Length: 434
Image 1 (cartoon, rainbow, N blue to C red):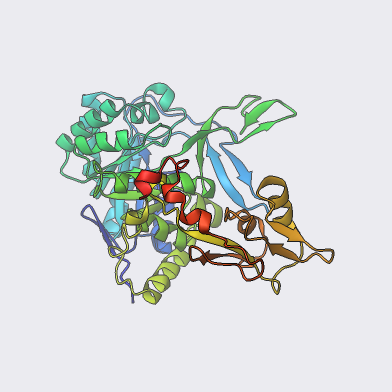
Image 2: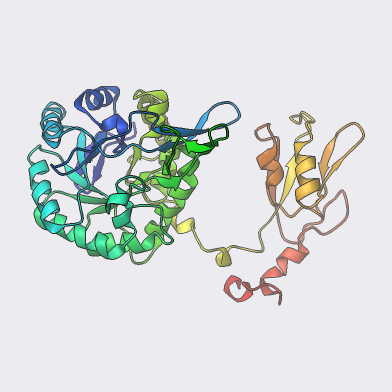
């Protein structure tokens, strides 16, 4: 059986699935239910300093984007950090850690950008027995307007400074949670590393407005006729998260830095993709909010089965396996040629491939009078659009052709042009490709 246990910067957990700092981890009751369901760790909802209480809205806190089948693709969240007293949270964390010593319990923290504030709260939280800290430099709404969250995460100098303060205040691991609301994710990641961070986690939510109520002319979620931007999460943000994780994993300055992957993890396969791109574990929120805590059981069984079937004995053996295959466009092999192939046995004759190719691509698919669709190799540029719009899985596939191959149906050489492209004068990447 595959071993799913992880040791992430010295923090041990029975599997790589942690709940992210969010509404599901706001109190003891939820966290206990999560651990009973099988989650390997929890990042407690972000704690703030003692003082004026945090006040959340008493109205809708989430907006949503759905697919055609009403499947939830993304949530927009305008909820702030915990609005429960710090002392209450600390008491609950202490009890939970005592009762679940084998599970990871991480404290997410956000206080004003002042040295005394950070150095006062970090040791106090450590007394709970928590396994480490996650510095919330990512929240894009509400707290950012108070000079915290992404307001810090967008300034590398602040990240490095606050991280150094926290490392001076504790011997426990410090994870820096990065905001995606920035041009280049490598700058804040490097700043976290320079400040002494043990790891980074990403991505936090993306600044967004998910919809507008056209009756009241207000963004949603709507509070008494007004709306605001919030943080976007869920399956829709996964591609952005994967890219940012990969950039950190393959950059010379941050390569080897431990990463906790966050952003749209819904299935075991999503988790495996993050891990293959360099994440040592993953954090989940929207999937738990959509399907309940027991969704982790499918993640655990699915990842375990896939690892067994593919000879992976540990999570560590998968970490970063795909990173060497992530490259810049200029280094892609321009001699590689593929063509679309349509399975007539599987085709339902809907015509989507034809419409997409004829109207918006390269007119490489023909349609006969009896609605038989075929690919013209001499026009097909292998863009893959037909594969992506076809409603029948594996009905249209891409076949790799050797350079110079002659199409028996047309008698034409289908790939000579591509074979010469790496040295073609009009190819700006010719030198690099050679």
